[in-house]
Image (cartoon, rainbow, N blue to C red; front, side, top):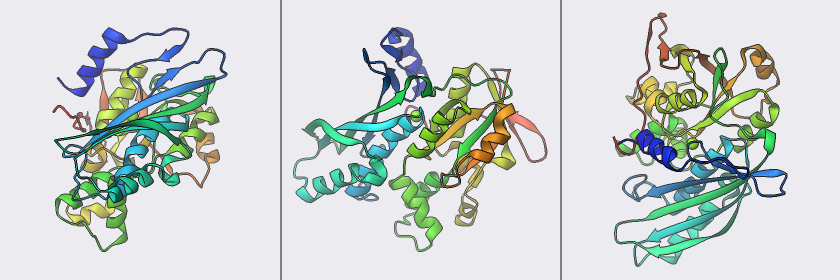
Length: 327
Ligand SMILES: [Mg+2]
C-alpha cells in the first residue's frame, strides 16, 4: 500500500456528496455547506509525529508549533479559504516541562503562522513513544470561490508559487549536522523546513481573482503532487525543466537543486493552473507583494502522461519519487 492507494480505498468506500457535503475525501480539505449559511466551511487535518515528521534535536518547541499550524493552513490556502479556527490534540511524554508546553502553544498561535485562526480546543494525552501532534483547521470561503484539484483543462498553463526544494535543502543540511548555519541562504532553508509560512494570502488572492481553474499545495514534491492534480482534473501535464524555480545556492552545498525541487517535498507552495488565454493578463495583475509565481508548464489532454521537457528539448516521464509515508 502507498498513500495514494489508501486514499483511493477510503474514497471508494466513504466518498459521499450531498447537499451539505460538497467535497469529502481526496482534496486538500473537505468542504461543507452549513444549512442556511452563505459561506462554505473547509476542514483539514494533519499530524506530526516525533521520529517520523520531526526530530526534537533539530527543532525548538516554538518552531514545532509554528510548523504544526502552517502545514494545516497550507491545505486551506490550497483551496482559497480564509483560516478561522483550529483544534490541537497533543500527546507528550511524561515529565514534559511547562516551558515546553508554553513555547509549543506560542508557536501554534504565532500570528505569522496561524494567520488569524484561533485555537478553540483539542485534547491532551500522554505518550510512551514520543510526541504526537494532530491539528484540525477550519476555514471559510464563498461558495463560488473554492478551488479544487479538479477543474484544470488541457492547454492550461501550470504555475507554482515561490522556490521549490528549499525545505528539502534545509532537511539535508540538518542531516549533515549543520544545525546553526552561518549564511543567510542556509538559515532560510532551515527556516522553511522547521517553521514554514503558509501561503494563505496568495491562496486567497488566487481564489478570488477568478483566473485559477484548479489548485493544490505542494507538500510531497512536484513529482508526487502534480499527478494528483492531473488525476483529479482528468488531464496530463508537461513541465519545462528549465523553468522550475529551484534553489540554485543548494548546488554549492553539495545537493542537486532539481532533484530537491521535484521530489523533496514540504515546500508548502501552491500549484495551480490558469487558462492559456488569460495567462498573460494574470501575470500582469498578480500583486507584487505576494510570493512570486512561475510558469512551469502546461496541462495536456493525454491523462496518462506526466512529462518533463529537458533543456535540450527531450521529453521523458516525470516519475513520482516524492514523499510517501509507506514507501
Ligand atoms: Mg495538501
